[in-house]
Image (cartoon, rainbow, N blue to C red; front, side):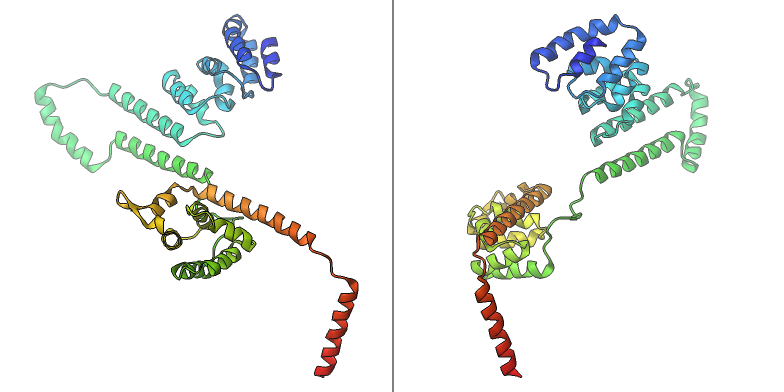
Amino acid sequence: MATVTSFEELDHPGKSELRQFAELFAPLFEASSDEARRQAVAALSRSPNVPSAVAFFIACQPIAVAAPFLTASPCLDDETLIAIARTQGVDHARAIVRRDNISPAVVDALVGLRHSRAAMTAAQTVPPQQPAQAQSQAQPQAEATAALAPTGADDQVSREEALRSTIKHLARQQSPSLTDRLGLRTISPVQEALLVRFARAREADAFATALADTLSASRWLAERIMLDISGHQLGTTLKGIGMAADEALFVLERLYNHLSEEIGGTTRSTILWEQLDDNECGRRVEAWRRADRYTYADREVLKPAVEPGSALKAAANERLSFRRAR
């Protein structure tokens, strides 16, 4: 416990310290009592700096000791978790299932492992072979029974497929949906139509104005985006604001002629568009808008204030114009 405590106090252990701890842990662990082992494992389950060799060693211990580490340790990657589930048995796999963050790859491995174990159990319960004559007589009856009602193996497969679908659905919910644009700037149908229209006519000035309005940003930012002749920044912007793919590709090809060239049966614009990640584009556009808003606000602050005298003159002229109108 003294070794574990001193290791936990290191916020950023170096390579030599990690190596020393890995060399000391196994012999100290073997020489300790069961209670000390459980306390050490519980303490290390919260540490993000456990060496991989030590993490694997702890995970392979009996479930009474390894359970908190399998359930909570951030040092167990997907490959290690899958290897532990396949080699250590059902109790270790159940502890892995209780982790807060479990990837779809681990879920698939656990479900497949459970299915294979069920198949092995069913194979072990098959009765010994009957004589050939009795087997030939029993075969039609067995086929009829199988046709009338599903077997236990079929039910098992159905349950496994339903469990797999449910877990995959839950895993997909953990990642942000592409249609969920809450908090992100999203293009409206009218704005999209204007951008397509100005791109079709190759009116760069009007396109920049419409783009600035779409982003609720300054015209300087829109022009800065369009000055990237590779089309990467404009493609990032259009994908970040949720523009339809076919409309965005049309805009890119009209404003940047080289993107309409075909390479291997596809256009450069399509290659560019498919290389862009939706979530990353959204974050980048929001960062550009924040920077532009700060810059634009600074420019507004630097503008000279209106003189009081001129304000009074303007108000007097306004009242005079109103009286004349009456």
